[in-house]
Length: 191
Image 1 (spheres, rainbow, N blue to C red):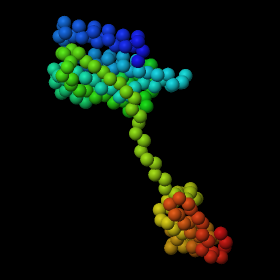
Image 2: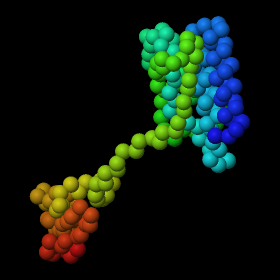
Image 3: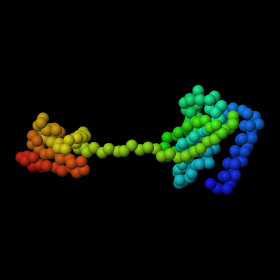
Image 4: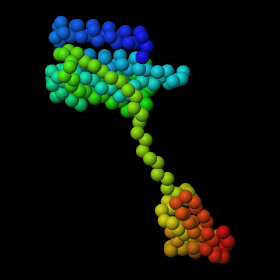
């Protein structure tokens, strides 16, 4: 954190704290949106000419009184704030590393009208990719779900192909979980 940023943060806390204590006003949803936008702008980083990455996870801490008053708004409040933040991000050409997340909590050390916002970047969770072997033939995809899959004209073959150039059960595809091999089943037409 730079000296100027540290100074700005202290000045902001002092001014916000002084005004909230002097006027004892309740936090309004627009103030939450503004505070998060400020954190978003401060945390945005230029990755390259085409990409500006902004934090995507925000925790808003409110005084217990403000939290109790706003809590009934719950997900409606969060949804509205998200909508405003997404519009702001689009306008600024910001991108996120994952889904935009906003959490609201109470903090006993905050006075009525005070709030704190923390921001971080949380990468999107990527589910593990499962590969399944398949044979693409004649515009169809056949999953090779068994260790041995037979191919031929006959109804007893796992994959039936209407081609007089194939034997009734022409060949088998053997799959051991990592490698596929083709086995000629003694067809008269060759493999």
